[in-house]
Length: 223
Length: 223
DNA sequence: AGTAACACGTGACGC
DNA sequence: TGCGTCACGTGTTAC
Image (cartoon, rainbow over all chains, first blue to last red; front, side, top):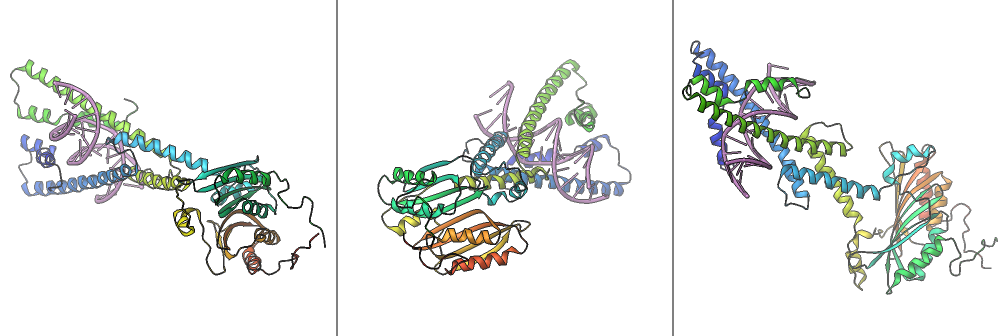
C-alpha cells in the first residue's frame, strides 16, 4: 500500500459503502442475521470486484496516457486534457507530413482500384516535369535529387552517365512509373566541392531529353 | 436536460448528497434552522460548482478523445482504452515515418566511414548473385523481386524489356549500388495468371548476364 | 479562499 | 447472470 497516496486509505475507510451506513443508522435488518450478512457479503464482494475492475480500467487508460506523454516532446504540460489536445495537434501534424510524402493519384481507368489497393508500393510521378536537387544530411555531404519527367527506356543509362561526368556516385535510387511518366529519387555522393549546381545542370539536360554530352542525337545505326 | 440519458436524473435524485441524507436520518441539526439551511445552501452551492467543473473537465477530455477517434482510420474500436492504445500505435508509426523522411548524416574522406555515417541512404548489395521473387499484398496482386548482381549500365534497360516481355508493369523500383555491384528491388504488377515463374525466369536471365531475347550479344557497332 | 486536477466508488447499461 | 465500460458526484491535494 505504500505506493498509494495517503488519502486513499482514509477515503476507503470513510465512504466505503453508503447504503450500508444508512441501513445501520435506520436499524432495519436486525432480524434474520445470517441471511442478512450473507446477502451483505455477497453484495460487498460484488462491489469489491466492481471497483477493482474499474480500477484496472482506469490504470489501463492512464497507462496509455503516460505512454503518450513520453512520446511527445512537449512534456511540460502535465494536465490530462492538455496532453490530449497536444496529442490531437501532433497527430494532425504528423498525418499532414505523412500525407505530403504519400501519393495520391487521379487517373480514372481500371488502374485506379488496383493502385488504391496497392498504394504503398507506388511512388507516383507528377504530371509536370520537375527537378529538385538538395543537400541532405546534417553536414550536407549527400545530395538528393528528385526528378519527374516523361519515361523512356534509356533514361537510367543517361542518368548514370550524367552522374559519372560530374563525379557523382549513385548510392541509392527509387523509381516509380505510371502512365508513361517516371519519378525517380537519387541519392548521390559527390566528390568535388560545389557539385550540386553541376549535378543539377546535368540532370536538367537529361530531363529535358536534349542530347547529353557525346550521346548521339539520332537513333543508333542499324547493323 | 433532454440531451442527457434518463438515468442521470434518477441518479441525481438518489445520491445527491450522502452526508445530508445521513445527517437527516440521525436527526441532528433540527435546531438553528436558519443557520443550518444557510450552511446547507452554501455547501450545496459549492458542491454544485464542484460537480459542474468536473463535468466540464470530463467534457473537455472526452471531446479530445472524440477528435482522436475521427482522426484515426480504424473506427471499429469504440472502447476508450483501445482507442488510446491505437493512438499510441499511430503516433509511434507516424513519428517513425516522419523520422525516415528526415535526413541526418556526416561525411569524411574515408569511404567506409562515409557509408556508415549515411547508412540509411545505402541499400547495400550482397557479394553473391541473388534473386528472390515473391507475391506481396494482401491479395497477392503484386510481385516483388529482389535481385543482386554485378552492375552494368544497360541493366535497367534489360530489366525493363524483360518485364515488358512477360507483361509486367514496373510500378516501383529501389536501387542501391556499391563497389561495382547492384541491388535492386522491383515491384511489378503482372497481368496474366501465374506470371511469377515467368518473371523469375526472365530476371534470372538478366541477372546471369546472358543475352536476352533479341538484344545483340556483342557490343554495338561503331559508326 | 477558491479553483483545478485527480482517483475513487457507484449506478446504469450492453453483451 | 456476470463482466466490462461509461458518466457521475465526491474527497483530497496543490497552487
